[in-house]
Length: 183
Image (cartoon, rainbow, N blue to C red; front, side, top):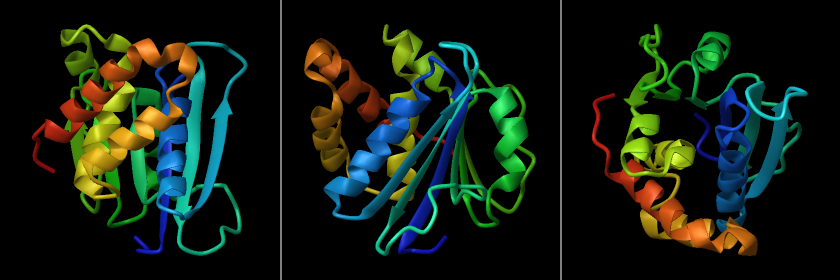
């Protein structure tokens, strides 16, 4: 991974918070005064169709917003893992929700972190925040930022009309930061 540029790809079904997670990472880059690209992609279905989001965080200008070979891949369902696992650069990192994806990724040349994000979020009565649990784990393992910075960014992007769920988003981030698993 180029230390001055990080290419992330987040993928899953519509309704799993893929685009929000990408927006969060892009906002994190802006808070760090980095160059940022955020490119959402989703099918015509409102929920349940394929959704993915490309994010680039860079210390230099970004030539293209397209991420075809991510340094960091986040998969929230099996079709996403099947589609993007082999595109991840050698030496890259893969995070996946192993409460929804029952097969272990096949790659041996990348770091792999399985986290039962949906189960963790459901157990805490916030099933819609599995994406934020995964973000917490991603931030801890990649060291893109510390938990306090992540919390400040989360506070800045949760819209005023959804301030009632800010505390749950912050708790979900913490759950991800605290989750221990082996690579």
